[in-house]
Image 1 (cartoon, rainbow, N blue to C red):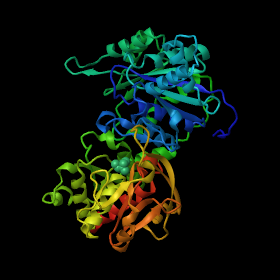
Image 2 (image 1 turned 180 degrees about the vertical axis):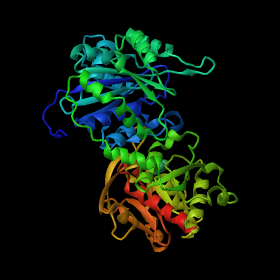
Image 3 (image 1 turned 135 degrees about the horizontal axis):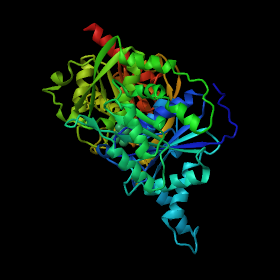
Image 4 (image 1 turned 135 degrees about the vertical axis):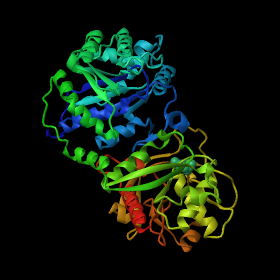
Length: 542
Ligand code: GLN
């Protein structure tokens, strides 16, 4: 492989747009192509341009937008950045996600400062220039920047992004800018046929904006014959060998890079852009996928939360389970359990059969009592427990109520009394605005030796990502510790509790941060790996 050095590169840009309908998997397609180029020795980054006017998804409901993905540098971003990081295997930054809101915010702020004095500020060139500035911000640092445009071609909102894409092609030429369009070829049962018309229409829409696709990725549930690919190529003005069938993968999204490699997608890209193919290293990935497809063991894990109707809300947690499962050679069956439905009476039937439970992150009071009831059950029945952020906070409340004799224990997020064992962080006390004001991004944490956490990480110093306003209240720390709760991870100054655990239990651990955001394909995350191992042990004991 070529050395990953730092010389200034001629950066090439690959745009990925989507047509026909949403949810075709543009994010996974971008991540997969990025991974293949990286495995051919190129330096790659991936960006997402989102058409909505929110400055970031941080203020959106998880039902609306799915999970908010947080980067090391504290940006609240689209969940596709999670796919990019999981596939590429390294961290991205706030510069990798732009929204229409950010673009306008920047331009309007400049306008107020007098930056454009005398001029009328317009979509073209002012908005499009700002978009291009953001698209090219890594110029010279990477061989490839993949740019995924959110939404579907034809949406009003994404027009300025497409216009910027057109201009980039015009300014830099076909050797440096490549357009990939992801479409859908539906199978119509009554006709017994695959239909190409929706693809033709969406390419037509793209051409109206002056963008000619170089490669078509055709999502389909059935095989595309050579004739059909020829037809699509002819009608859409794309070379036949660049019309690529993307048939639904059988068991896991992590098969997509293998599928793309089989279709020689990255080779076609490299040829079109005039770059050498280099050797492709895929063996580790193949083994990773093989373990997902044919695991030796299986466990049943409960994911307790209130956003269980929309699995995208827990995207990174679900992916982290897949990674940790693969490393443990184990299929992790996830049962989503709505905490609002858990009561003292039904808790045993809701979670008693599970090999472990994870109580997830969240905001607000709804569903809290169910979470606390579930935690009491797994604590007393010695079922492995993993609490993340709000899940960890609930485990502290449960312990304070049922072990420390503070029945009124709560969090300041839910009510104000004298027993807020979880309370607003000092730095949050004067915060008035909601957007981007939580404790966000990566912070260091120091781990106590001989703890469960230390065994999992194998290190005393770690860094994990955060997204919260509340924390364990130090006023209650001594009492909690006296009763057996171990504060096994804290901020380096010892002030903020980051990890709690119980020792009279096979695996009971809560974290104030979000480990799921740093779990990567192939390598996984130490805490998830350790938790799945514990659930396997628990199952074997039964
Ligand atoms: N609502 C809690 C807080 O702000 C937990 C946040 C979370 O789970 N990410 O501290």
